[in-house]
Image 1 (cartoon, rainbow, N blue to C red):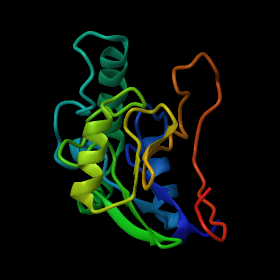
Image 2: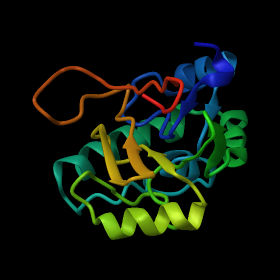
Image 3: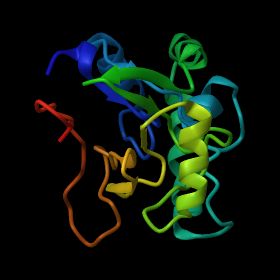
Image 4: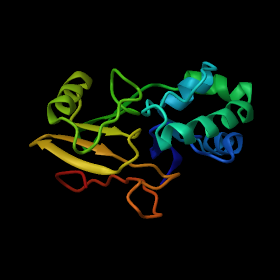
Length: 182
């Protein structure tokens, strides 16, 4: 897949042991990246990753550790790059309006799961003027048809498991056929 056809839904260095090296690799690769809450937090020198985890949850405790490491490991040039990343990317694929975000349209760290409100997902699709929304943040991969023409897709997280008891990580590919996207 050519780099120009790849989109990362953000949080490039989340839970990453080689934060700067990962950023360098992503930048050298030349793929598109949507700004996630981690990029926003690092670029703006915030005190935490902004993931929105419940206080003192396992994820909150773990994120404090990796984020403190990343704040020190990521250089100023990379933080500046993170500040320039778009919060969304829109494109047309096989005559279908696609919109890529990190979490939610209005809240970068919004957790949207398959079980989240269909009404909320449809509202965000309407706001984005899209037929398909592709997100990340929640980390759990899913594809959901909301009605005849609207879909919400979550690519999962390529760098860590989906908290489903498996060690597999996730990514998503889109392919077009004569009449639809697979």
